[in-house]
Length: 268
Length: 191
Image (cartoon, rainbow over all chains, first blue to last red; front, side, top):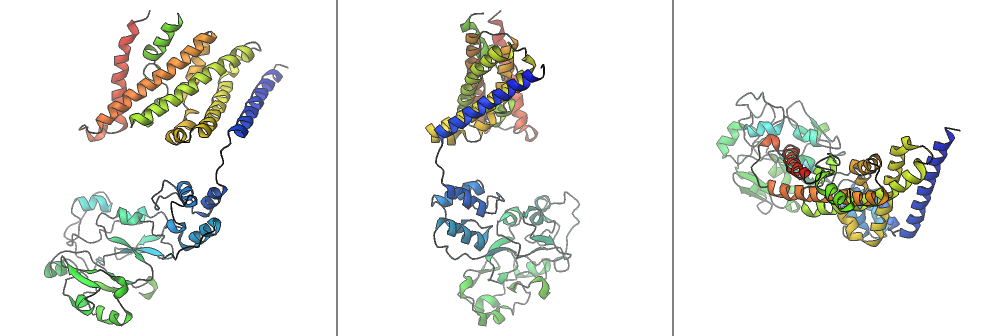
């Protein structure tokens, strides 16, 4: 009996409150678009914020309200865009898969070290000290990008440079932000001509600092003047669309290999 | 103690944040902008008043007659959780902009210890019904006062040159301590 009273009281109280809430819910129900829930389910739910919204839920709301295109989720890619477009009943725009690519080829062999860095093992810290390489623009090789990658799409290779596994890369841009030397950029996946250098040093200096550096000799820019320019002692591709397949062998004449086709890991 | 004294006392002297050190979590978490701090204060005041009413009713009509005072904590948690839900639904229906502004703070009030503290303190001090209500409103206003004061100071602190190690929570707690000391001065007002 002594136990029954508290159990009954609490049970009854809970019951009353529950009923009160149910009643209040009925009275105060707010119509929310059921599509928001469906769109949110179709999204990756990684809440990475790469789309610029607070999370997948906010992204879903914006998509349903028409404030954002079905293709706005860079992580989900074409599949997600397709699903979202189906739910919303609109035609999905073409979505181009993007991937992050490293603009440096300063491997351990190619780029000599000027000192030994024993400090905190992050690129950010090393960069503050000026880095341990002779080249002050190149990859520091301590893997801030690999740690930043939420999709395990990167790993550090034995040559001291990170590799992006393009199948896993979702172009979320975390590595672009993480790299203190801004060596990552998001490129369309089918586009594989890249300048593998960010060095603004003059030719002789750049070459001394790294065998694979761009020395701004101008071979590539003379081959395709409408697509490649030289700026600050560095070749820059201004228009990827104007590089035709016929021009690629000419571009690949680059004496240091600082510009050329991206080689997949299995191609060696 | 007459009601007016109790009201003033619960705002200034027995301030929930600065005297009992209850509800420090939202006090530090939501005190970066004065607007947000004020919204939070209003929400807390609202929930506190309702909690004071309902918890007194339950305490005096159900728990005490059946000698179930030891269930106070459980019962009060039930009251607070339900009330916050109710308030959330109500605000969502009646004022979407306010709902947007309060955002995550509203559900956070559920686990805010100053609400629980209010219900328990009111029963501990054996306040009558009018006293409990006045205590609830006063405590809510006191919380609002404290959090808005804090937010205003922190907005200024953003521009101050604070030593690296003290930035953020460190300096906030020091400031809280200093405000609490200042509020201690009020305690001489009432015997």
